[in-house]
Length: 251
Image (cartoon, one colour):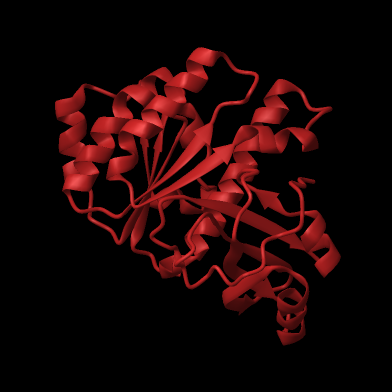
């Protein structure tokens, strides 16, 4: 895994979704430390240029929607390879927030190499008995796990207009199928990714039983798979992967 990346969390949702293990690679931008666009642009220009920059934020937020276009425009001018993880509002949220999210994403797409949409609604089924605080903590944990899986992809992250994310771990192949977490419910053309395996037999069982193309693997004490879902890329070399038959399952 390359160390030549950085993560920028914008607003509460973005900051809370940064994987703790990559805090040394992260930059946090909030309404509390925002002192105007001139100062922000200076700070962004001072950042070391990396092979890729992951930006995590909810485009529905007032602060995030206000600063995102300028942040992405500045980073794009620096020649950064930008991957934006858009934390989508719940379907139960106000029309105003959902409209603001869609408009913000529409306005910033031109600056992006890759867009990842993360639908909060996908996490609801696993948290029916949770308090609101527990619910939000678990959502942040799920998103953080997906982000960490994306980072593991290293240089295999496709330069695509839009991708999804998935992650799973367990002791058996059946548990991997049961514990799959997807970033959204949009049908995909296939899954590519990395795996942690205990031995080569684990790797063979994954490739024989799951609709995923493993690009790299490493030996570990448990089995896990992480990677990306590909959408509408007929010309992609990865489109031969069989689409997943699993629904959205989160445990």
